[in-house]
Amino acid sequence: MARLKTHDEALRLRLINRAAATVFDRGTAALSLRQLAAEAKTSTTAVYSLFGNKAGLLASLYEEAARLFVVRLATVRSTDDPAYDVIRLGVAYRDYALANPHLYAILFADSLGQFEPEEEGQREMVEMYQPLVDAVRRGQRDGQFTAELAPEVVALTCWGTAHGLVSLELSGNEPPGLLIADTYERMLRAVVTGWRVDQGQ
Image 1 (cartoon, rainbow, N blue to C red):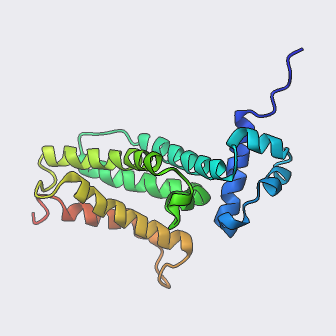
Image 2: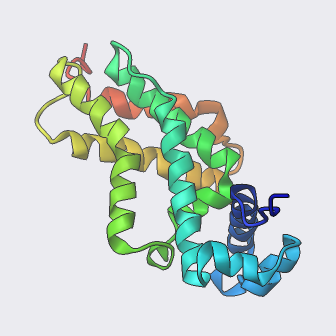
């Protein structure tokens, strides 16, 4: 009879999600591998087997958050309207954040370095950023966007707008009486319009 495999992918993801929730609520200092194992109804041996140590767990948190983010953006298929694709990517950005606030917080935490190795983090950030850059580049090539600046710069303004709005929404810091959800896509469209060659028409 085959031995029951207890340290499997399902357990790994369960531990990651529970750990991410702990970090989101109370910070990394509150993350205890022993407590995590107890909450997940498994052993500390399983946690160490899957992640090695706390640093390994934190790195896995970041990697899973980045992986799911990249997967979500990949659902936005390119069309013959790159400007609209940029807006759709911004909508997907918000969708991911609202569905996974604990993972979103880990991706963009001020103390990012504690979650992942520097080189690995840079590679994953490029993967997250690339779809937006590619859409802007296509827009420049097709004459929709100004080509005065590199596509990475144009993409950064769109990313920064989405990030700022989503962060305000998630933190509950929207100005009184103003709901970002009501005008989010329109605000993205305004930023995209500012980079269009035909913005004055």
